[in-house]
Image (cartoon, rainbow, N blue to C red; front, side, top):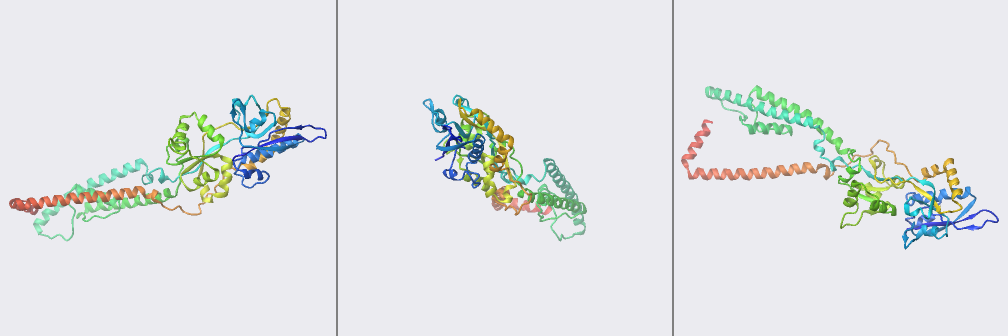
Length: 458
């Protein structure tokens, strides 16, 4: 169960009376944190709690007092007019100070007086930018829309030029054949649109054709076509390799995250549940919560710190967490190449968390002065830099290439399957037409002679 720490303060004077005080360094999500308050192990666990614990110790030194800590299960909820947990200790007068950093709310003002803002709250969605292939069709990205349009235009012009060149050459060859009775030694192209289009399209895919043009004009068009296609294919292939290895920067806003295929998770801590359920008034945030975080009929996607960060490392997953705590764990578990495509997006922007005392406490002014001195001396900034990690820096070097997966080649496999199915359907249609033609020839011998005669003239 999560624990809260409560403390009683004793003044360091010979004749001082004992004053009950509540010190709550923060909501402790793991019981072992009580044994790790004075070292730097597992900094990602209850980071704010440990950080505020040390600030409160500095404050006790400034006012020449010592603290006695009490453990509570919660910050405190109002039940039948009274609070439980840490706030209950303050409300009943059993304690003076809440060392836990608290958010300012209207309901707490009657029983609390806020002393100093100690913990800037930076909640972020932390994720690894996904591969371009998981979001976009990388097979159309190497060329811009203008280049694609010009490419198709050139292929169309080439097909038209080839058709008329072959048609003219075939007419010349027909007259020469009638004069010299030459016998063809190779398969020449027919003057048909199907042959011209198939040759042009096949050339764009670096495929040959079963026939060739016989004249200079047709062969020149074919050579120019193959030369242009080789240059285009070289540029296209080189860019595809770079795109497969690239993560891209397509997800930059919460709206991008909502419409992306990424899964969403939230650090399972009280204020995260509270903010998402009660303070997410933005329409995009509401959609994100109800569609991806807590969809109807499914278990809400609230995870522990270790599980959430591991999901970020291994898949298409964005984790909403306090950035300093999250980066503490990321530094320990991520490889260098996995750090380079880390990205963060702010969503909720709550005000910083404050240390508070009970209303009309005699320690209010003393603690305000103490925390001001802590800030001015740099102790607060030093503690924040020690406990809350910055985003790990990428050294700009990838130690290994990314493997090509099914996601990267999915569209090419779809195109291959479409081509295979289409070819089978066309083959079946041709066989049906051929059988029908044979059947008609058997039933009408005169028609068969006319067909053979027409073929001979052709």
